[in-house]
Length: 459
Image 1 (cartoon, rainbow, N blue to C red):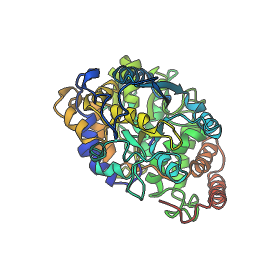
Image 2 (cartoon, helix red, strand yellow):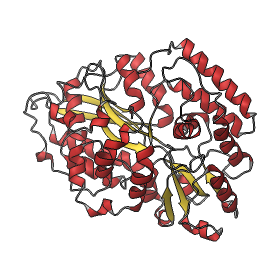
Image 3 (tube, rainbow, N blue to C red):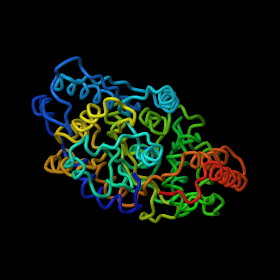
């Protein structure tokens, strides 16, 4: 899930910096001795071990299995290199994340460090949830961030409240080349319109294999359809200043019809066995095409190598075939330090070491991710640029050329707005009247605007 900037400005820098970074290989992880000595002074270090270790709690949102393994390895490396600090690492299941965080914050026991998506940073700053990192992390670390990403981790006061780890587009089309051939379709010509997508899905639905897979529950649809909402109507279902709903725009009918046709004509699985962010339906061979984020390249590489060998990647089809219209939003993840943490410096030391330190640490991450994610740091781009392994990756090249340049930023408004619209998509998908569903969404968004006093508050 997810950047906040002008829709095209994100990509301008991402193509030069972020995309290049993930498009090139990785170098060997540095030894513990290559890190800043524990005796250096703040910002960026908490001093040598002169007494009991300072405990820093770090909660990570559960992602792909390889990410948990990578974080665990790096936490161990940090702890070994910093005798004065002990980072306590906890993975929190995605479906329990919100409840667990809210409960911890209410009890005054919030973790010192959190993984935070881009969509949560601006609201978190407004609510005073995050510590200002200026003064805790060296200035050159912030200078290393791509200009188009800096605005997503900073506030109007110019201060930084998060450090970015990666960016990634939310929607890419994956399809089986062998099944295309068997169905009489040309694997070199993936669908480019929604009508073609439906037609190909019909041809591919046979032998116990569904032609298409896409998000189908309101929570998943809430964020995975943002790019397609832009594609259908050129805007999201709320006014730019958040003063009024715009869910009844007739252009959205085509979007809801797409989902309804795929579901009611049984061209997609009837139940969401796996969430949108999990490519297992496709990896297991149960569907011939699937929509998914760029991160799913990494999951296929790690868990479904045989399927990956027969996989091609393309930009998700546009409503009318215009490839310059957005079909994805560009999001990602950061690390933040809790504003009420009593060990902010030590927490910031870990963030700095992991995300803003030796580029070899993060190049190792992008290699581990199968080059399915993209770095916002110029130094990481430079470290990766000469590696032929990533530059020869065909999936990354297509995502970089055909998806990222046209991706939109994720919206900053409360997720309640997204959930109101995605509930309409889910209802229509399962056969409800499309006009009625959009009307209900419009009223629900108006209610959110009124109750949360959103009018005029758009950042």
